Amino acid sequence: MRETRIRILFVTCALVCTGIVMIFSASAIYAYESFGDSAYFLKRHLLYLLIGTVCAFLVMSFDYGKLRKYAKPILFITLFCLCLVLIPGIGKQTSGARRWFKLWIFTIQPAEFAKLAIILYLADFLSRKQPKIKSFIQGFLPPAIAMGMTMGLVLLQPDLGTAVDIGLISFIMLMVAGVNFAHISSIALASLPVFYALVFHVAYRRRRILAFLNPWEDPRGVGFQIIQSFLALGQGGLIGVGLGHSKQKLFYLPQSYTDFIFSIIGEEMGFLGALAVIAMFAYFIWQCAKVALKAKDLFGQLLCLGIFSMIAIEALINIAVTIGAIPTKGLPLPFISYGGSSLICKLIGVGLILNVAKNRTDQIE
Image 1: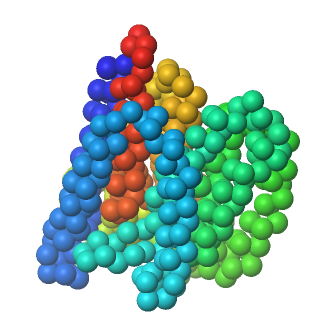
Image 2: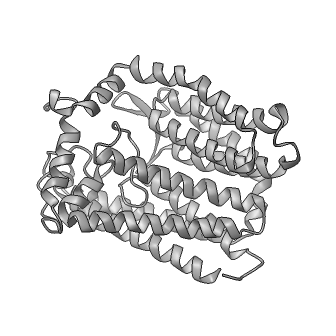
C-alpha cells in the first residue's frame, strides 16, 4: 500500500498548504489591527502545525495494534479533561462558552481530542465484541454509554456542533461493525426530542435556524454572517478576484479565517478554486477508504473508518454552512481553518491511518 500512503500524504500536504496560504490571506489585516502583527495567526498556526506533524510521526512509529490496551484509559482521561474544562478558573470562557484550556501561549480544546478518543475506544470495543455484537447489553450498551457521556459533557460547554459530530461518527462505526440496527435506530429516535429541545428551546440556536430559513429578514443581525458568506462566494465568480484581494475579509465576514474560510477561498480563488478544495477532500476520503478496506484486522478497519468519517463529516458540514445549505455550526474546515486543536487532532488521525497502511501485511494494491 505504499502508493496509497504516498497519495494520502500528498493530498494532506496540499490541504495543509492551502490552509497556510488562506489563513494568512484571511487574517493578516485583522491580525495587524488587533495585535500589530499581520502574521500573528500564521505564526501560531505554523507552531500548531509543527506540533501536529511531530505527533503524527510519533503515532506512525509503532504498531497501531498496541493502542488497543490504552483505549479505555485514553477515553477516561479525555472525559476527565471534559469535566475539568467546565470548572471556572480552569477552563477558559469565551462568548459564553467554556471549551478551552489556556496553557502559556497555547489554547487547547479537549472536545477535539474527544473525537479521537471515542473513535479509538469504539474501534477496540467493537472489534473485540464481534461474537456478541448483536447483544443489547454486551454489544450495544457500553459504547452507547461512552458516546452519551462524551456528548453530554461536550453539550455542557455548550458545543452542539461537536456533539452532533461525535454522534454521527459513532453511529457510522456502530452500523459498519454490525450492531443491531434496531438498537441504533431506537436510540436515534429517542434522541430526537432532546435534539429538538436543544435547538428550539435555546434562543441563539433558534435564531440560527430562522436565519438559515431567511437570513435577509435580519441582515444586520443574525443573518449578517451567512449573507456576507454569500457575497464572498458570489464575488468570486469562476476564477476569483485574486489571492489576497478579498473584500469580505475586511471586517465584513466574521470568523473569516476559521469557520468561514471556505467563503474566502471561493472569493479569492473562485468556483474553480473552491471545487479544487472539495476534490482534494474527496480524493483524501477515497484513499483513506482504500486503507480501511485493506487493513489487516477489524480494529484497523474501524479506526480508519472513524477517522476519515470525522474529517468527511466536518468538511461536509463546514462547506454546507458556508453555502447556506444547513444552519450555522461552529465546525472548522479540516486542515485549512485556523485552530490548533483541530489541526493537531486531524494530523494525528492521518498518522494513524498511515500507520494502519504501513502495517498491512498484504502489500497488494
